[in-house]
Length: 227
Ligand SMILES: *Cc1c(COP(=O)(O)O)cnc(C)c1O
Image (tube, rainbow, N blue to C red):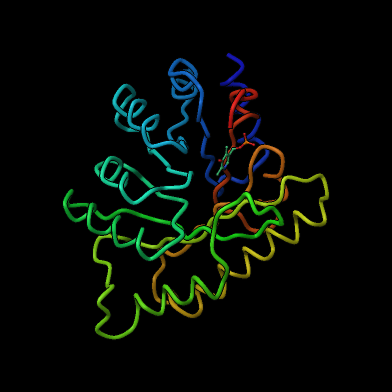
């Protein structure tokens, strides 16, 4: 019951245009079923094995978001069904997703993850690293042309800190990165439209700074024992 209420509460605090990804990592199936019964269809997981187990067990109209660090050798396990990979941080990973998507006769949507925080525990690229990759992909006769991957936007995590000014600044950085890439590579591609930013403690700020997708775990499902 609490889970349904928590979802309702988060939804009431964000505009309709912002998607809520319920981050269910480490949480048992019953919790996801409760969220599903409340109408939630977008779920986020950060471990491949856990994602597959939940995918196999739960209804097939769930949209599964992969939000963790993805190893290339595990892409094949999620390529048949994953809805959106939020955490792409290399050309090699994009190529692997493209290859596995092709095998499954699908287009897999991806976001490029950016490092916007001050913590070195977090993953992601900076703008020039991303531009290097996109230059490779989009140059004429590129050997890296990706037929089965669609790059739909950007993702980032702010520093785990209480300083509102700093968090806001980090989200602004990601928003500007999005606009820069949109203008340079994706101006004629309307699907490049997603900015995945905002978690339990900072989603209000993220939405204020232009987030289109928030990834909320503990506020919906309660605290986790492990990350
Ligand atoms: C765990 C996680 C979240 C959700 O975190 P909460 O603080 O529990 O809302 C969001 N994004 C990523 C990438 C995560 O790993």
